[in-house]
Amino acid sequence: MNPSIIGQMAVSGALMGLVYALIAYGFQLTYATSKSINFGQGELVMISAFFSLTLTNLGLPYWAMVPGGLLFGAVMGLVVERAGVRLALEQKSEGWILLTIIIGLFFFSTAENIWGRDDRPFPTPISADPIHIFGVDVTRLELAVAVGVLGIMGLIELFKRRTLLGKAFEAVSADRDAAELMGISATRTVMLSYGLSGAVAALAGILVSPITTVGPTMASAIILKAFSVAVVAGLDSGFGVVLIGMFLGALESLSSFYLGSGWREAPGLILLILALAVRPTGVFGKAVIRKV
Amino acid sequence: MLQVEDLYAGYGASEVLTGTTLSVKKGTLVALIGANGAGKTTTMRAISGGLKPSKGKVVLDGKEVQGLDASRIARLGLAHSPEGRKVFGPLSVEDNLLLGAYSRLPRFFGFHAKAQADLDRVYDLFPKLKERHKQAAGTLSGGEQQMLAIGRALMARPKVMLLDEPSMGLAPVIVQEVFRTIRRLKEEGITLLLVEQFAKSALEVADYAYVMERGRIAVEGTPAELSRNERVIAAYLG
Image (cartoon, rainbow over all chains, first blue to last red; front, side, top):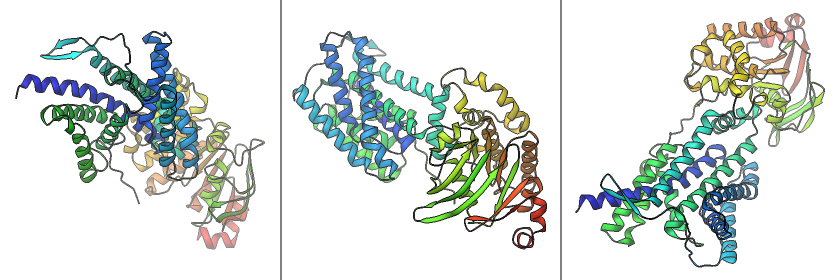
């Protein structure tokens, strides 16, 4: 085995893994405030990517398209919250699971009807030429993924720590009823978390599309691995999803290289099963201790 | 300042409150005492909106607030320091206090500067909190968490403050400290509704008191009157 090939595979896999991490981070945002997640998040990634592609085709430059795509993702996140989550949560039911899956299917058929079933290239001004860093070749596209993912996660974490609205977000996550007593509207905070989660999913779509192409099923494999990352890392550690996401990305690129591309999905699923068996709260998750 | 009229509330099909009526005048300290399960905490929750009353009225500063969301009632000037303190464990002491003033502060920047005077006032009242302002609230002792819960409610500059079982689970020395604090709040003219299991201590600080039994007010009066009432003495002061 050639160590430089291993390094090369691991690094580009890890950079792709950051996309899983970003989507998993979106799950964490909504789970924190409402103990619910959007099971149609993959379709949200896909439909936001299509929308961004349309913006590009309309002649919008890349840097104007990105905020437009994020805004679209945020609005779609709010739609999911309003149509699929809020009513179920108000009735303390688990109905949001089914409802979010259904909204995902709705997004899927909408996308098929508007944009068709074919995979399409996603143009980007960022070049795919490799640059040589520390003995491995990394494309600018892959670097853009890393910068985008870590950048937006950093911004959101900064928002949570430095602004009063962000602290209120944390307060609702810690104790929803007590936060209400402070005058913080839990409903609005849950909306905010779904909006952020949608924007984050849209960014994941925009970042990954130039590499994977855009199509109705573009996110179905990605979303499974994002789920794995979220479960393995735990649903409350942003740092954890980055680490586990990069680890899983590297692992799957190595296994598809050495074992054959059919084994690409295996590591994520094995990790998921292991995590559920050994540490259901996630590697970085906090075990919930209930005081009696 | 706060009137509760013929309030009915409960959990699911079981009504806990069956026609509670009480009132708290501006600048007074009113105590609500009674046995466990009489409905004291339920009354507090029904007032602050954590529980929607099925019938009756809650009037805060002349405005009917029953049925509104808890966050809305809080913004209208009611601060509720809940049973079990409910501080935000992962957040720092100072963040907990800042969130107490949430409805008055700008959401993004400059909130700290705007809250400084209130922070100083709370730190002056509870120097321990100043020492630990950066510490996660969940790591404080029970007594310190109670001080934080009271301080957090004060940050709102409330028209009425509800204080539910502030002595619960605390060592006797700390309980005395809590009552010293309550006395000080009263001297500052804060309008307070206090729920307490230590009926004797509560009556010592209160201007007026209600005794609750099975979801409604059984006896009411000034502490002096209640201390002469044989039923009250037998059940709560003996």
